[in-house]
Length: 396
Image (tube, rainbow, N blue to C red; front, side, top):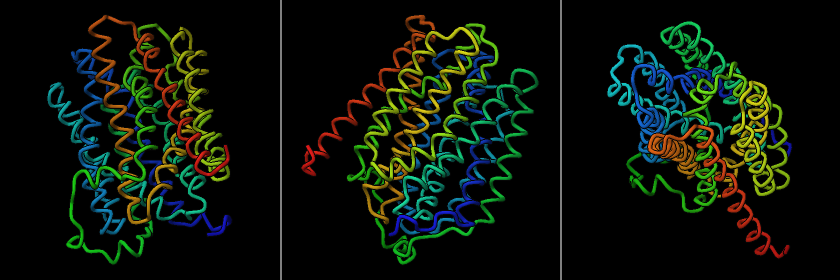
């Protein structure tokens, strides 16, 4: 393919917009569900389970979705996922029983695992292979731009109005996303169109793991282990330290990620994943340590900005790295593995660090300090693969 192959088509634009509204609907709940469930009597471990059970649900469904993506048209799968997310979001205010909320969170994870896998694969299908880094960078921006508004708005509504109002607004955003997906003309690869579900054999592990893409997926797992502690505990951390304007972390984070992601996508297409991941992991490590010592809003904003540059540049690069290792037919499986790595890292992080914090009565700044070292593991793993690749190509 030519480097100037057309990227911006109407279906790609509609997919980005629909994905953006879906992420806005979802991201409003990310920082607010942990403090909400804590307010109604949950322990630190149960707060961690809010993230962990969600991730388990997403991971369990993704092999089956990867299997379906080998033979099913994209639009049907996208609409099922979008509608499921919308309906489940509207159920949250119906109970304050912690057990039921945790079960609902698990089912919500199943719907999220379905939706993110098929949406991401639909994005891959619409992007020229020669511009995969740039294209998935822009696709990732649909989530990032949603993060500019949704977490900040969600925290503001939760702290100043009510959880029920938050759910109503989240449902409206999800409805807009569903409508936009309905208007999108998705592209299903020819090989997939020619394949019947009867011609494919389901294997849980075969649909969970793509052997060619496992290494960058493992790097993704380590990356999100650090991020999981922020998702789960940032709002509680800010409230415990008496920091005002906690939303600034998410706001500045998303703004900086929006600015740098197109640049990082082009850098990936020119240079590959290694230098991008190496530099970004160090920036994210520094951002985490600024958060550890944060006692003022401006420090949260600074940490969020650096985290947006580092983590925000890494994620589309990691996704493009995963996809580049596999075939078109297996892109759904590889994409599902990428998102499962994200959910597994976030889920394990939530329950592990929540349990450690409760067991040793740790201040949450110490939790962020521990989790930050996973970015150094990411640096080391990427450097090892970089050296291996250069050796194989005779450039070292």
